[in-house]
Length: 329
Image 1: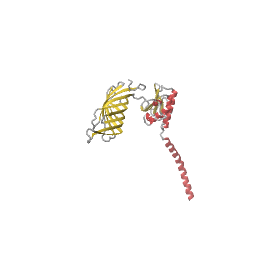
Image 2: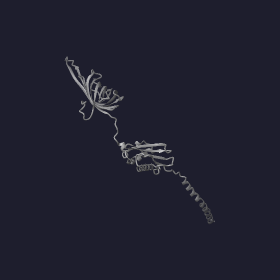
Image 3: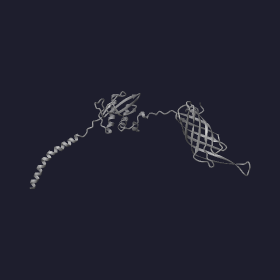
Image 4: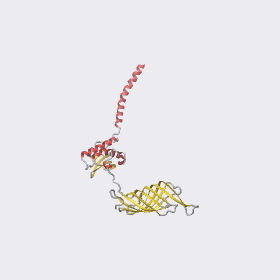
């Protein structure tokens, strides 16, 4: 009985498996056939009057290779296509000895949806330029953000043009006022050097002033901002200084009539200053400035605080290297 049952099961399973196996195979093949096949993108070689055919094709091959590195399937570069989507185009334009490489994504052809461009000095620089152009286009980055020490082009490495400026020797006289004392319009002197652009100036100066009651001397470094680029301009500025000052004290001796005792106090340290004024004759090789300045030391003298306020007039002469100093006009 058991033998007949086994025989009956085998007799039923064999026809069933024979029927189902081809169906399973066909289903598997159908499933594999339904996987979406994404056709390769097209890389077009556009206008290239700046370079030869061979160089244009070689440069396009480098671009195509960089697309593949980023997982984008790109066929061999061609000059024409009937496709209407997944189009990339590379073109070359010349300006003097420079070459402008332009890489764009188009959909449909002729309608640019993304683009990047880079200046190169010669076609061999496509070796460095190709990875940057493709990365910037695919990852939607500015082309400047893709540069590193090994991919900077000669055009980017050229000497930058600078805003022109002028060097000046500066001399001046001022009157000093010391709040809390009788010092008013006491004479002081300044000399220094500055570098000026139409909008900004930086400089350094030595200043000193003295009287019977006080004296101060300082060395400062700072900057100024001009409110316009015309012949006459107001300005403000400030900076830091190394400041030294002292007071002299005279007082009556109550025991000996007409006698005076003398004492002094001094200190030195860091300080800061604020300045405002007006600059004249800015279109010439000389300058004339009227200026008010407040110096604030970061310390106090033993018996008296000191914060000089000065008002003065200053003359600046254009300095040229090789000329005989600040007095050579």
